[in-house]
Image (cartoon, rainbow, N blue to C red; front, side, top):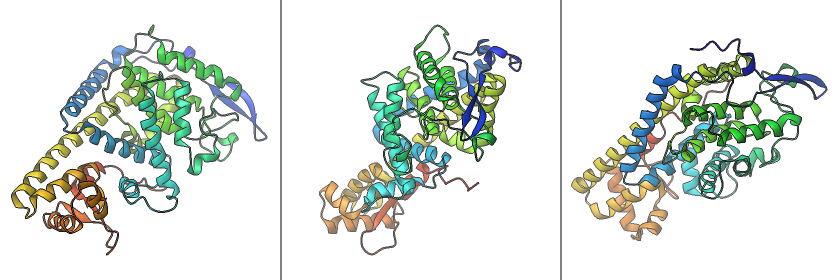
Amino acid sequence: MADTSTNDSRLGRFIETPVAGEIVRAFVPPPLPPVPPIDVLSLLDRLSVAERALGRLDGITMLLPRQELFLYMYVRKEAVLSSQIEGTQSTLSDLLRFETEAQAGEPIDDIREVSNYVDAMMFGLERLNELPLSLRLIREMHARLLQSGRGGTKHPGEFRRSQNWIGGSRPGNALFVPPPVTELDASLGALEAFMHEDHSRLPALIKAGLLHVQFETIHPFLDGNGRIGRLLVTLYLCVHGVLRKPLLYLSLYLKTRRADYYRLLQEVREHGSWEAWLEFFLDGVAETANQAFDAATRIVNLFKQDRERITAESERAGSALRIHDLMQQNPYVTSNQLVERTGLSAPTVNAALTDLQRLGIVDEVTGRRRGRVFGYRRYLAILSEGTDPLPAT
C-alpha cells in the first residue's frame, strides 16, 4: 500500500475559531479526490470481491417473488441499526409492532426516530427520480429525518450556522472539531462537485467510500450527520447503477466495528490514510452484500417450506395460506387487520391463526386476551439478526 503518512497535500488545514468561550482548532479537509491520487491498484482485489458480492445480491433480488417486500423490510432493518449507532435502543420488533398496532398517542422517542429514518430514506430514493444527488436532496432528507422527536430543535433541513464538535464534553477537549461555519459553503460545494465529476475515473464504489468520509468530516448538520452519511453511500451506488435496488446498508458492519470505524476516519483526517479506510469500507461492502444475499435466500426458502407445510398439514389450508401470504408483508398483525385485509370472517381468521400456531409458524406475542398481535416467528428471526441494541457505553 502507498505510504500516505507524509502526503502533506492530502492533509487538511486547521483554523483557530472561538467556540463557547474557548479557542479551538477546527479542521478543514482538502477537496476530493485526494492528491496524491488513491492507489487503486492496491485495492483491486478487494474492489473485485465487493463488486462480485453486489452483483450476486442484485441477481437474487431480481429472482425474489416480491422484491418490494424484501426492500420494505430491509429498509426498516437499516433504520433500526443506523439509529442504534446514534444511541437509540429500539429493536426491529419494536418498530414493526409500533407500525402494526398504530398505538394511540405519540410513540416513544426512540421509535419515532427510527420511523423518521425510514421516511427520510424512502423519500430520498423516490426524490432521485426528479432531482440529482445534491446538497438540496441531502437537506430535504435531513428535514424528514429530524421532523419530530429529539431532533426537532436541531434545525431540520438546514446546514448548521454554529460550530459543532465530536467527542468530549466541550469543544476544548473534543476528539474532532469540523470546519467552522465560514468554511462550510466552500467545503460542501466541493463535495457536491465531486459527486458529479468524472475526471478522476475512480470506480463508483471507491468514490462512495470517499464521499462518506468527507461528509462525516464536514459534519454539516447539528444532528443526524451519521445517518445521512450512511444513506449517502447507498444513494450514490443506486444513482451510478452499481445497485439496481437500494439493498446495501453498512450500519450492521459499522455497528459491530465502531472502534475501527472511528479510528480510520480519524486517520484519514490526521494522516491522509485513505487507502486504509477504503480497504475497511470495501470489506464492509462485500460482507454486507453477502449477508443480504444469505438473508434473501433463507427468506425465500422459508416462505416456500411454510407454504408447503400449510398445504399438507393445515385443516384450513385455504384461509391459512391467505393469512400466511399477508404475514409475509406484515410479520406482525392483529386478527382485526387480517379480517379487514383478507375479507375472511373473524371466526375463520381466528381458526386459521390457531392452526398456524399449532404448526409453529405463528406466535401470539402480547399475552393479552384482547388486542392480540401475532408474529411470523422464523421470518422475524431472520430479519432481526444483528439488531439487538448496543450495550450502553
